[in-house]
Length: 568
Image (cartoon, rainbow, N blue to C red; front, side):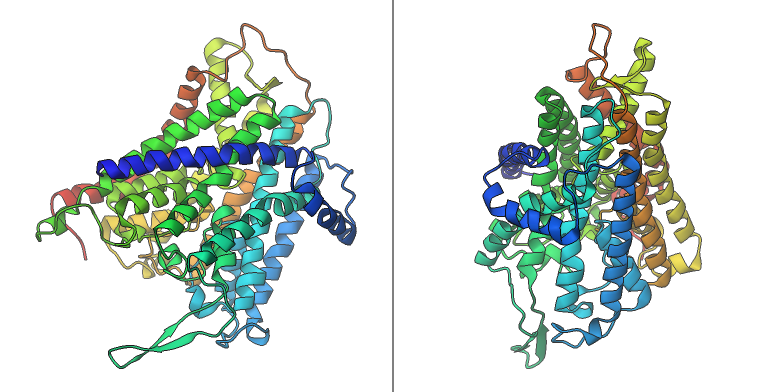
């Protein structure tokens, strides 16, 4: 990577911080129910929604009530998205006359979009009607993002409230997140994309006559509206099969910059929101420092890896950076930055072919997902995951100093520790178990297009992505089969709810406790030592969990490539 690429990374991160900080302050005011500049416009709509849905915005829920509402909402959403795919052949806005989607693909897709994963085993432009894309998929992009943000908000309330069992109202939380945050940003972003050439139309597909004398069908559709929330909501599911590498989704360098910023801005802003809500900006900045250190480290390794040519191709006389699978108009720096961000933020959108990345780059992407995507992470759930690691870190620190662990004035007892450990164990275990099942069964191996180490990486990446609710893929695995649709659907459900439900339960336990005043014996959580400890815990847990399989997959493939050996 040359100096221009390094400067681009620095300027990009600086711009992201400058945008995220005020957005984080704005979101804190929205979540606290304070008046904002959007209130005169949005408040009447918000009140109408409450009347329409018979919601009392002043009525708060216990953690069990909050979790129950969230689960019911997600079950109904899965059923709705599943049914609309099955019957899309009879519905309007289907100019290409696509039939209903096969049952296993429809089920996988419904789970995928409701869990904010957006894993796509199909080609959107050849499978989904305009109505399905909009009413089924794009709507869930808003709602699934709002659910993730609600999980973060309720956990924050657990730390800030005391001696109560009330944690807010789920229906109010997701309504405000959609109306005050996600929808306005998406409208602005969609307009910017349309101005740069991203299409937004209900016209049928266009048939073009090529200079070779053949006909080519050019897919059309309402792309810009879905592209905006796809990126802002940590969704990632593209209108087209090649996602944001398609010129109708990402036409030029400016749209690529906007879309890359959109991936990061809300997850980054939520860290600042956390600081404002707990009334401790220093604590928010400490967590921000943890995430930024992990981000920069991973980005540096991936950029270094991609800055070197594939040794096998180099022997053919092709030197320079690894441009295989990348858009020439975007280059290596834009591709690596996007790839790193989309895997730390559980976005899953892509602007290059991850299957063509160097082995160490792929390993970084898998590590980002395997550790729970807590480096800023998906909208809401990334912050939740980082707070799990912080609870574990405080337990370790408590053992070191011989004191009961505490964080933000709350004693962390056995219940909180067990609940925080559950997702840190279940999610990686699900990745490894399902990967083992795939590589040891004929059904799992049937979809594999690459042998040896790279084939293992493709299967491992698929389950890192589905369990991590990411949705990106190496794309060398034919996953639109009953086996992968069902195992992938299970993986997505485990990854989503094994994170969110423990978070709500922890919030309930913490809110019932009183506040513990800080003393000279309390472990400081806003300084460099805290930052270093949390970074170490994330890295060590990730390394201990995945090092053996990484060694057999991307690690061994890296050594094979250096020796000039490939498998076909």
